[in-house]
Image (cartoon, rainbow, N blue to C red):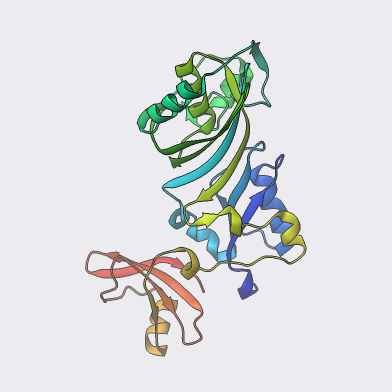
Length: 283
C-alpha cells in the first residue's frame, strides 16, 4: 500500500452520481477497495462528498460533522412523491408566494423542530427501508426526528422559484424542510436542485471533481489538516508500544495523534479513564 494513498479526498460530486458510484470510481483510480464516504448525497444533489482512503476509512466516525450547509432551489406548483423534481408528479397547479411571507416563514423555521422523514429514504422502520414500503405500495407511519435549522437565508426569488442557503444539523432532510416550509405557506412545490457547500471543516471551494482526480489534480488531506487534535512526536521507545497498541499513561487531553520521528502518522489514542487506548491505528 502506498503511504500517500492514506488520506481524505474532498469531492465535488456531480449530478446523477450516487455516493456509491463515486466510491467505485475513486476505488478504480487509486487501485484500492478500501474507500468509504462520509455523508450520503442523493443522485440529484451535487457538492461536498468526503472520501476516505485506505487506513483513513477508520476515521469516518471522527469526521462526522454536526452541521452541514446547503444551497437549495425550490420550484413552485409541482408536487412529487419523492419531494424532489425527479419524482412522480402527484399534483400541478399555479402557485404564488409573497416574498415577505416567504422571509417570515424562513425565519420561523430557523429553529429546532420535529421533522418527518421523507418516504423515499433509506431510514428503516421495522427492519425495512422506507423506500421499500413506497415501492411496494405499503402504508407506513413515517418517523420523526429532532433537527436544528441554524441559518436560513433567501438568496433569490422570482415568480415560480426561489433559492435559499441553510446551515442544518446532521440528519436533516432538505427535501422535508422544503415540504414543511411550503406547507406553512399553503402552496405546493418541490426541490429542483441541491448543492452541499460545507460539511464541517470541508468546503466546496476546496473540493475536486472526478475529472480533477482522474487527471491527478488533487490533494489528499491528513488528520492534522481536518481534526482539532493535539499532535505528539514520539521516540523509538514509545513507538514500539504505539505500534503494538499498548495502553499508555499520559496527559494528552481527550485524544492525541502520535507521529514518528519522520512526522508520519502512527495512531490516534483516546482517553479511557486514567489511560489512553488506541482509537485508530494508522500504520
